[in-house]
Every structure is written in C-alpha cells, then in structure tokens.
Length: 87
Image 1 (cartoon, rainbow, N blue to C red):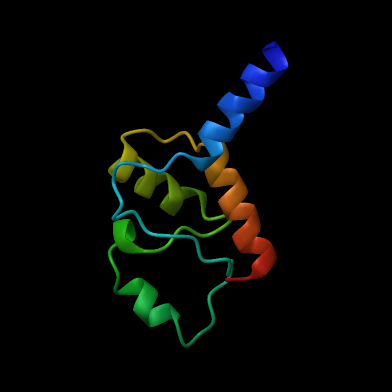
Image 2 (cartoon, one colour):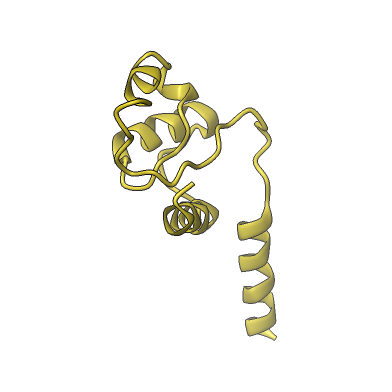
C-alpha cells in the first residue's frame, strides 16, 4: 500500500506542470556554439532556456519563475533527457 502511494506521489511530482506556463524549456547544449553566443548574451537571463550544468542561470530562473531555488525531480529528468538528446 505504501509503495503504491509512493509511486503515485512520484508520478504526480514528475508529471505536474507548473502554474507559470511562460517558463523557458530545456536546451541540451552545455557549451554553446560561437554563432549562438551573441544571441544568448543579449537575452536576459530569466528568458534564456535551462541548460544542463549551468547552475547559476538555472537557479536564477527557478527563483524568478517558482520562488524557490531547489530543483524538482521533474527538472532532473528533463535536464538529463535534454543533455542526452543534445537539444
């Protein structure tokens, strides 16, 4: 019974969407190509996409959009998937 409740809570945590739908998505490129760097530099940090291993920028965006700096399990899954896919 406890296992079923735990699995249900885990599924809810992973699938729950945030109330602020304007939050940027994930981009799996850790080191941006030279051609994209000026565009990234000219974009405010809160509007840039989340990127794996970019701890400062991701923290600033989470704090702005969610009011907390702690990543959710969903962030870990999405970030890992973006890193693997490279998009």
